[in-house]
Every structure is written in structure tokens, then in C-alpha cells.
Image: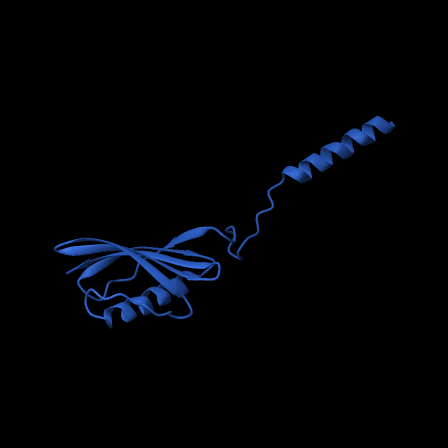
Length: 123
């Protein structure tokens, strides 16, 4: 085989390796940092959990964080806010209110792990 053919084949192999996808996976075939939607649990009061999204966390862990944050929040009254960590996650909340209800987006973080959920609560 001529030398230039071997060089051409070598260059093609290197190019193919350089452009191949190298995303890490999280055991279930999804990219490790990909956010995924989970089923939102039933709301215990008058309202609805409308979405639940997790990153680098299982859906069951996301649901546990959501419920723990809800219990912490309700402990401060019907319109209360949780100001402490729940299950090792620090949570921040952004609310939009009208006289009869409020809608909120909660982001809970533990390092690179994320649990994000939204809910609507009647006042």
C-alpha cells in the first residue's frame, strides 16, 4: 500500500474520532446534565403542582424534595415561604400573585443537582 494512502486513511480516522459525540450518560442513556420532566404529584391543599423537572437527580428524589419544600413552606402559613434547606437543597422561589391565587416557580439546588417545580395555589 503506498505511503500516501496510509496517510489518507490515518487522517480520515482521526477526523472521524474528533467529530464523534462524546456526551457522558447518566446510566439511563440520557446525557448526564440533561434536565428531564417528571410527573407532578397531587397537591395536598387547594391548588396544583403544574410541573417537575430534575437535573442529575431521579424523579423520586425530585418528588421528595418538592414535598419537603411544600411542608416547610406551609409551616409558615398558607402564604408562607421556606427559608431553610430541605433534604440538603437550598430553594429559591419566584411568585406572581393576584387576589385569588399565586403561581410560583421553585428552584432547589444541591451542588450541580437541580429540582425545579411550579405550582398554583389558591389564596
